Length: 277
Ligand code: ARG
View 1 (cartoon, rainbow, N blue to C red):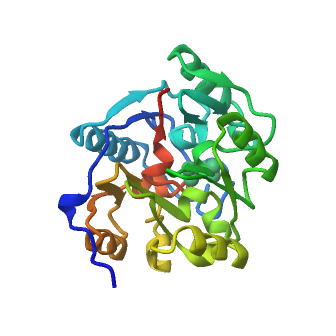
View 2: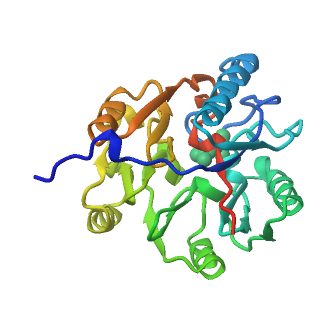
C-alpha cells in the first residue's frame, strides 16, 4: 500500500473567489428536494454563516470579491452557479429554472466589468455547480440541471477535455454536491452511488485513488467543499469526511452553513473561482 502524504506535503495555491452576500436569501420556491418553502428561514443567521465563510477564505490568504445581491433573487448567494471561469475566459450560465434566470446576466456583467472575456451560453448550464476543473479534465455533470449539449459547448470554449458524468440522485442534483475537487495532485472525493454505474466506472478509471465519501456525509452536503490544495473548507457536519481528508494530509476547515443548506447549498455553492488568464 502506498504511504499517505503528510500535511507538510500538501501545498495551497492562492485563489480568487467571487461571492454574493445572502441579503435577500429565502426559500420561496422548491427546485430541489432540500427546499421546503413552508419551513422557516433565518436570513440573519444565513448572513452570519456566510460572513464566516468569506472571512475564512480571507484568513487562508485568498482574495474574495463580492457581487451586489439583487432583491427577488434568493438563490443568488450560490455564486458557483453564476458562471464558469477558466484562463480568464467566461462561459455564462443559462439556468434550468425561470426563478434563477436573471442571475446569469448579473454575473456576466460583473465579470465583463472586471475584465474577463465573457461569452453567453447557448445550452442550459449552471456554472461550476456542474462544471468542475481538475488539472487534467473538466468534469461535467448532467441529469438534473446542465444539458449534455453544454458539455461540448464548454469543451469548445475552454479547450479542456470534458468528461461527462451522469447524476442519478435528485438530492445530489449538481455535480458539486456529489464530488469534491481536492486540487494539488488532481485528487477528488465523491459519493459513488450518486452517479450512474457507467459514470462510476469512468471515475474509477480516472481517479483510482479518490476518497469515497459516506452517504451520511453527502447527506449533509459534506461534499460541497472547497479546497486550495491544502485546506478543505467543508460543512462542519461532515465528520467522517473531515477524518478521511486529514488521513490524506489535507487540513479540514469546518464551517457551519446549516441555514443555506435549507436551499440545498453549502460552501462550494457559495463560491465561484475566478481563474485568471
Ligand atoms: N437552490 C439552489 C438551486 O436549486 C441551490 C444551488 C446550489 N448550488 C450549487 N452549486 N450546488 O439551484
